[in-house]
Amino acid sequence: MKIVNLGSLNIDRVYKVGRFALPGETVPTEDFCVYPGGKGLNQSVALAKAGAAVFHAGKIGADGAFLEELLQNAGVDTSLLLRGDTCTGHAVIQVEESGENCILLAGGANQEIAEENVEQALSQIEPGDWLLLQNEISAMAYILDRAAALEIPVALNPSPMTPALPTCNLSSVRCFLLNKLEGQMLTEETNPEAICLALEKKYPKATVVLTLGADGVLCRSGGQWFRHGVYPVEIRDTTGAGDTFTGFFLAAVAGGKSIPEALETASLAAALAISRPGAASSIPTASEVQQAKLTLQKNEEVFL
Ligand code: RIB
Image (cartoon, rainbow, N blue to C red):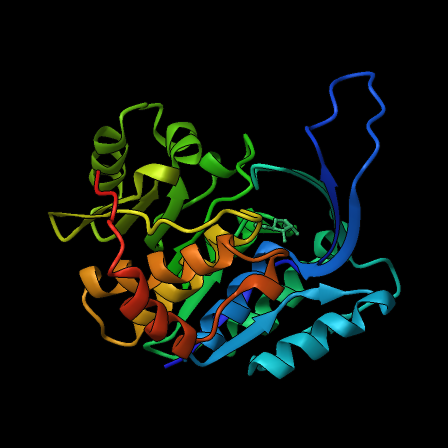
């Protein structure tokens, strides 16, 4: 069983700021770093570190070779990765003192995924495999149509949400991993329970994992509710924490773990990611997560 992640790869240019720039304002930055990132790449790294067999299918430019190397070092198979002549996708990220971020995306090679590239990636998927998607690459409507036609189970992190995504064929989605805002845009509901129930009604075979920031996570699966709180850590940089959660959750579920186990592991991994700078670089290993289970359990957990 493997997971094919048809997703983005970005070069993250991260600026530490006292506070986010306002319209028309110029803000001096306190620090600047370049990190590997992209929701797709981050999730592939998290999956591999959590022990899943993952293939990353996406596209980089000539300046993105270090991203491929990083994936390989993390244990991700890059045989489906495309290399082009244009620029690799990049993100301009402001990170405030509180660890909160604000992201601008430039698609670059991520927006050059064409139908034939999609076919090439999907042809590698065998029964029992998963297709993982975010919303940072081109051809999303085509990918979702083809996944439905080929009956490929999809795990979808609909981030960043766009007006086009809710109009796509989401019938092949078996796992939604989303935040409240994305849930609102998909369902027009505002209450977390109502968002989960609306998605369940429309996609009864899907597990819905709704992350709620400091309020933890709410999950609806097989007609049952599951909840998990956050672990208290010192927040340094929230960038990539959602991707870490997604990778660890999906690796656990695909590996046969129960939903409560998957929520616990993913919440611990996300807490560790939040306590470190960068996106892909902040993702913990499975053994670090196991270790955190012993230490963070001693602290008070904040349940919904
Ligand atoms: O989810 C975090 C990621 O969003 C960053 O790494 C950035 O590249 C953007 O894609």
